[in-house]
Structure formats: structure tokens, C-alpha cells
Length: 482
Image 1 (cartoon, rainbow, N blue to C red):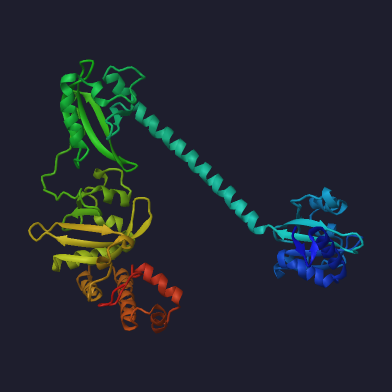
Image 2 (image 1 turned 90 degrees about the horizontal axis):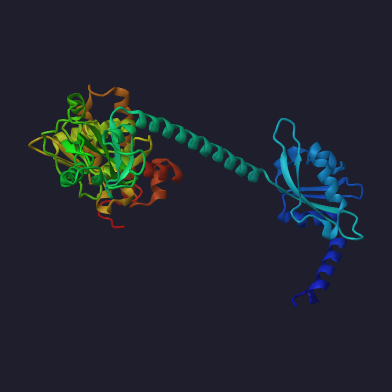
């Protein structure tokens, strides 16, 4: 059995009670106040004899002037019965979790507090210990607000799903959604089921090839394989369905949760009007195969029009399918730093390769992310291939700007005079100059961040914010290793 000052446990607690009785009210309040927000000593009439507050701000709720007043007079009307119940019980009848009450304050929200009362025979005061719950209430309110927001978004999603499903089902053109990996049917609208003479149920989950004649299945499989990688829809003219109905197909790829699925449009073979609407002329321009590159890659024309992109680029811009990025200007994903793209293309007009160019990409969901761009211009066609990577995952040799890169970037501004509004040019040029100055300070101090901040007249926190902004968190002066 453990002992306390040489006494057994039971004797030790009895000694503690005796010690409590021997202490004066100030000592008791100070001792208990070490682990509580509010400590009150009440006399036999339940009037406050002493008040101890862990935070002076709590005094604004009437507690600073509580001495001499009854505790019931300091709380809201609905909390009075709880105070009466707390002070009326002792010993084992006392609630272990305490009593939650509210202190009122004019013009401010009530102060929620959990009180517990303690007394000892022969001790002239009742010790009331309180723990304020404002932070807990704020957390609970945030949880409620978040839950309500999630429920609102879920309702919006349900309504949007209902709208698009309605549009999908009442469309006059037949559509079949196909799992690109399993090549099975995910969904089909009424027009497709009617055209293929299929029943209203039992289609979902079936292999797409089973909806067509056995002799046509190899041809269909080839078209599916081509459509999954083609930048344009693949058209299949006059193919026999399993019920012998001649139809034509247009297969389009789209991305869903990182996978490539297909939308198969179906129309009667004799409908030349629908065939014209579905047909897309294939581009004659030859583009580089970017699919094997591990980072986001895109190929553009000399004026920034996207000609090709890989799956990683679709992921970082949150584009569901390749056709949704083809033909768009690359600058549409750099709207908040449009001048960066002007500078990059101006440099590429003079240099064939640019490495370590930092900018900020804005995806289709309006989210920003820093990227570092390495680009190459084809000297014959003028087309540009570029790789976009997050600075956090770049190898250090690419994350470090090449010597003189800031000066080369600054020279690109001369080519933009008259093409870009002066206020935009000035704002972006100041960013370039600020980055150059930060790099120079890090070089001079041999990467001593505290000293560099002092040289630049910045706080260390401000310097670290700017380092993140310009992608210089891992910057090392020339010749220095990490």
C-alpha cells in the first residue's frame, strides 16, 4: 500500500483534509487555482467569499465583482436550479461530471462553465471549482457548421446528379457509359436501350462486347482500345448489334477518379445528320507521345495552344478528359500569374531550353499550386514541350535556379513592353526583383536565414513566407551542397 508522508493511503487523505482545514482561504484558492479556470469559496449562505480567475477576461462576466453575492445571482435564470442542486448534495450523491451553467454578460455571449462543489466537515467554506467551455463550444459550433455545410453540399450533389441523370435519360441520342478497364457497361440511357432493342434491366455490369454481334466484337475491341488513348473520338460506322440492328458508334474517353472510362454514343446507321455532328476531324499535326513521362507534361504551339498532354497533366489541372484541354491556351491555367507565361515564351523565343522556371498553376477547381517548369522549343516547328513539377518533389539539381536565371528572366520583360499593361508588368517585375534580392542575400550569408532576414530588413517569419512563395525553401548558394 502506498503511503503519503509516512501514512497509509486512507490516513494520507485524512491528513490532506486536515491540511485543507488548516489553510487560509487565500492559500486554498491559490492552490486549487493551479489546475482550474475559476475557483470560488462560498460561505454557509452560498455567498461568494473569494474569487480566483485563471484569465482576467473571465471577470467581464460578472465574476470580478462577485464577492459578497450569491452564486445563483451570477448565472442565467435557467442555471439557478443547477447551482441549487450542486450546493445541496454532498459525498457520493455529487455528480462526477459537474454542472454546466452559464454566466451572463451584457452584449456578449454567455460564458459556459462546468462547476463542481467540494466541502469538508468543519470547514467553513464550500470550494467550487469551474472549467470554462468557450473553446469547446466554439469547436462544437464549428463541427455543427461543418456538418451543415457537408449536408448542404451533399444535397447539392444529389440535385446535380438528379439533373444530369434526367438529361442523360431523356437525351434523344443513345449513350452508354463504359468502364475503360473492365470494358463493362456502367450505365445506359433509354435511347440506347431502345435503339439496341435491349430490355430496361440487366445491362449494367455486362461486357460491352455482348451488346453486339459476335462477328463485330474484334472490331469493337480495337475501337475501344484506340479511343482510350486517342485525343479525339473514335467513330465506328455500321456495326451490328446483338439483335441485328445496324448502328454507328462514337467512342470518347474521359477520366474518372484516375481511370480512363468511355462514353459510347449510338445512333442509327442511316442518320447522316447525327453522323456529321459526332464526327470530329483528326488533327494532322504530329505531336510527341507524352504518356510515358512521370511528371505532368504538355505540348503547345508557339502561341501557347495545347496540342497534347499526358494523364499527369490532366490530374493536376483536374480535367476529366483530354479533349477538354486540347485547343485551350496554356495561360488559362496561369491566370493569376499570366505574366509568367509571357516571360517564359519570350525566353523560349531566344533560348531553345529553359529550366527551373517557377510559377503558380490554377487548376479547373480554382485551387493554386506552385510549379517549376522546364520547357524546350522545337527549332523546326516552333512547338513547345514542357514539364510541370511541384518544387517539393523535384530533384535538388532541378529545384535550384541556375546561376543568372533571375537576370535572364528580368531581360524577358523588355520584349513585353507594349504587349502587357504597365501595371501588370510592374507588379510582376517587382516579384522578380524581390526573388533576385532574396537569392543574393542567401548567397552573401552562406544560406544563414536569420542573417539574410536581417540584411533584407524582414522578420524571419516574413522571409520564410517569401521563400515558400518563390519556391526557395531548399535554395542553396552556388557551390554549396545540402
